[in-house]
Image: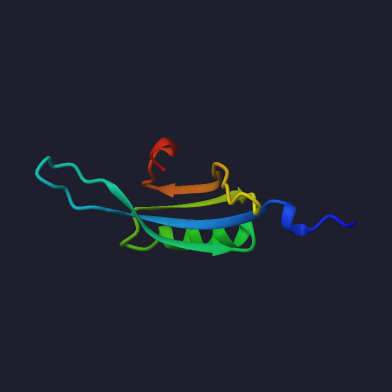
Length: 93
């Protein structure tokens, strides 16, 4: 009997961008997720985050990895590769 790859964790490399909401009556804007891209390597996710962060409509960008247990579908906490510009605190993620 062989161990199937199905039991090993799957790694996802994500580039996520943020845009600023316009301030409301309280006068304070906040961040919301703009775009998300998934890549097969950490370098690809980091490169995309660096390019996206240069865009005028992008407040900030993260590149991070998460591991997923394919049996339960449970996803672990993100491990950040790079954080650029205006990004939320981790507990707001």
